[in-house]
Image (tube, rainbow, N blue to C red; front, side):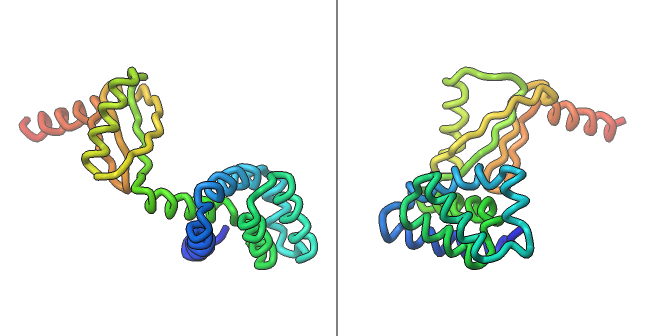
Length: 180
């Protein structure tokens, strides 16, 4: 797997070119689709072969570009990855690209774990509060976790905001034990 620094360098290079050409959104969508395809176990194993010849890597990049009918910039980027034996690292590069893309557009992703599903209005209220907290547009991913018993746990920008009933009960228990 490609190191984080290298993935960021590749992502930054293609992101800057995509921004210059006004196709950052197109490239983001294409890289996302390509990363899903490269997650296929068979393709991932093939791309990770240490002795895969350059000619074969280039042929794979060309096939991928043709099958997905990608923008010329994305196609050229795939060729660069093939030449540098980095096609297997497309998933890490896509993640780094997505982070740059979102940051440039003032977006952050949040994982919201809830004990039960909630209505859209309640979810919108929570997302609005998170937007005010960060000053950015929050893109939520909602997960249902019955172990929480009630409330929510939000993971946002490397922080965890835990307002679950399970945690509140645990804190109450600790307080009672300390007082005893």
